[in-house]
Image (tube, rainbow, N blue to C red; front, side, top):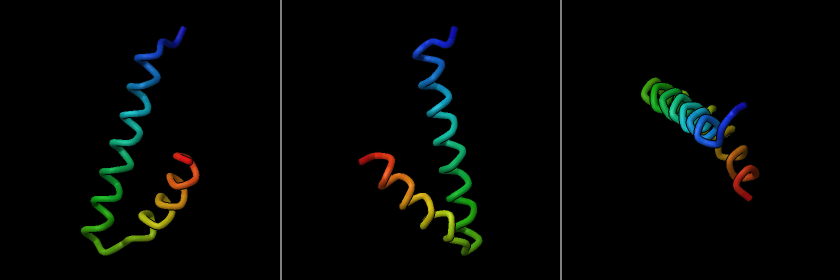
Length: 46
């Protein structure tokens, strides 16, 4: 059985991974992921 804490932990881990990828790509001058994530999270949070 998956507990609430486990699910929250997976979400936090996933968001941390995305954050690190965006940071690395921005340092390389690649900002396409930023644009896709802005659209995704805009729809997801609304």
